[in-house]
Length: 175
Image 1: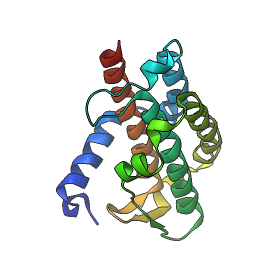
Image 2: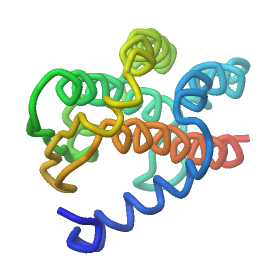
Image 3: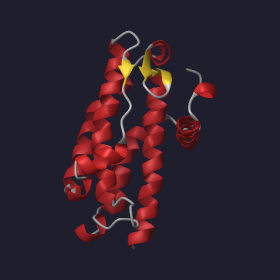
């Protein structure tokens, strides 16, 4: 499926996510996100980590839980894409996960620690990919169609930057 054939909401998300990354090295972004989050939030009291940005919005702790869960997803997608021939890559409804897995009740420090640990493990896989892997390894995303490993890694880094922006907004809201 080409970008032009994607549903407009999906295409908008993809375009914005890739634009956030721009010309930045995705691996550098992925390496830096855990420390960036820790540095920004280390001195906050638990109450600030649990305070949502507003009605129906996420707290910092919920963002951390989301990042921990999506790290599982992104790592799985990368492993499938690198080892299978055109594997199916399933999309998911993040809002259902927020509710079903009680992100509001998760311990923010534990969620951030889980994210940072899984990120270190996933970086081993992402760094080991060859230039050929970036182009030749293709997954079939259920919402976005064909997705090369290169695009997958760029989308993952753009997702980090999307949530870094959200964290900055949340910090301004809870300050």
